[in-house]
Length: 587
Image 1: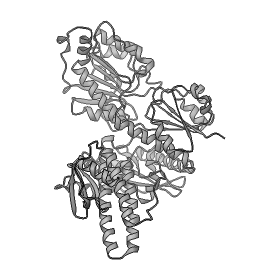
Image 2: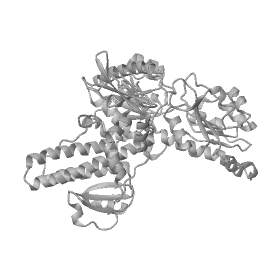
Image 3: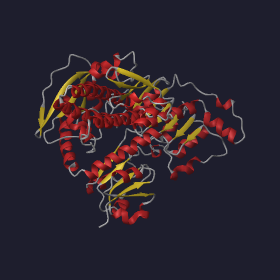
Image 4: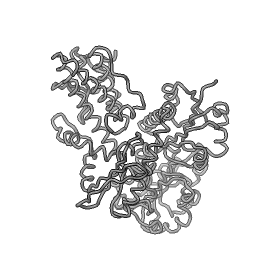
């Protein structure tokens, strides 16, 4: 019998990583499903990207399909109703690329405001259009953002220092952002950022009627969601007629390219082939997420039951959250802890955090829904804002570790915020991507520091001949190293019992060899975790003194650079010296 298959749409992820890590399945990359008819019949999982269609015809060719993995957020082209009818799971990562897309949004807006595309197109056609390239200042611009998902929120965060006022197009689901009725935005905004998914209600939402209403302000229009959300031809005509001052469009697929052929008249137009997420770190992160997700779905037979346990608890959380919204209309409710991260066991409770705009906060009692206990905790928003202040930047210097001490002391509370999301499936997280990245750095630095302390204890216990105690500490070191790897991969610190679960069953067994071997393995894994968060490309530089190769030395990364540490001894390293040290410990 031939092996089941994984299908990968070309460009969706690195198929080689799936081949290396999932040996039970054959992996096929495809441009069109008709090119892989046989493998499609055996496919249990398909990885797709924007532009891949999964309608009735395509799904009919995939009779054994169990999972669809979308390396991004968009659902356009996917028949989600038919997926539900067939019981096919849909797994997305809507946040991984949000910051990169927002970065593109900022770059595009700066280009439009300074009319750079117009000048470039003019020169390309032999015209010197300096006078026509007089720009407008962004500092006083009113910016309207259409769509409050991860990309819209990330765009607001990255644009905030450069523009005047930002509001979102009002929707009932938006409760925590400044907003304005959509009908009022054309007469108010100087800039429109469109970050909407391609749904029926959003199709051509910004149409000729919108353009007519906005013509008086001749705004800049930046599209980072889906092209279907605007009337493309109407927008291009408005740009030609001067009713738009500039147009930037990123989500241009192959079938859309004909709209943006250069015409006889230079325009302040920037169109790119859907490159918002095309950043190396984002692609690497998405590749890792796809591989980890596929492994968890295909290689863990208990995954379905775990999903059912989570589903029951999420439904209970949603029911209690609805009750709380009626009882405390000015508050916001967030699900936290393992269930919020998609993990539960048969006895798991659910944690809800209720945030109140002002104190004193009430004492809330736990509730039971369908046999599931929902624990409630009230918290003042001011306390949350104070905690989020620690997530503004990662800052540790050799002579200034006060902020690190504070972050370590508050790490449990920061982990609650890191796990917090709206209490329903695919709920919006409380923290934005930048804050989650700072949390990742604090958490990893904490685990590295803890590992250094454990190694010091281990050395002392072995010298004292306390082997039983040393064995216990060695197991703690093993757990700490795995937690460091988990945090480097983007997971929160959920507690020891969830450590192997977060690692998707990949936790190595504690080393059975000599202590030196265990320490060398820990050192190598900790360095790999640090380099995942702080990648280096420097060439090895200089000799490595032999004493630095002793297994008790562990790597650290502070804001001011690299160091290796053993007990109270610290040696600072340049990136080149680190590369030489890494090469020496991995001959």
